[in-house]
Length: 79
Image (cartoon, rainbow, N blue to C red; front, side, top):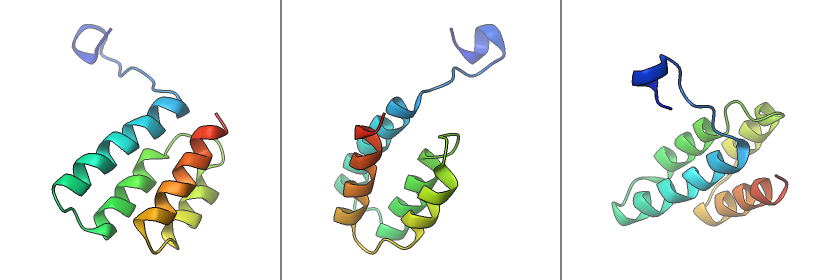
């Protein structure tokens, strides 16, 4: 079902949100998106996940894409 038919958005689970982030990350790399924008979007991909406020705090202190990938992979493995 989609919004046009139901008037509601489908709820994505934590696993899908993290997978969507990695898809975004690949596109961001291909299009030379700045690290700050990638990090900002990583934080938005975590919204609605239990305990995500602490995760977003951690993400705000990350300095490299590699660190970001590691944290998001850890999140995915804890699904």
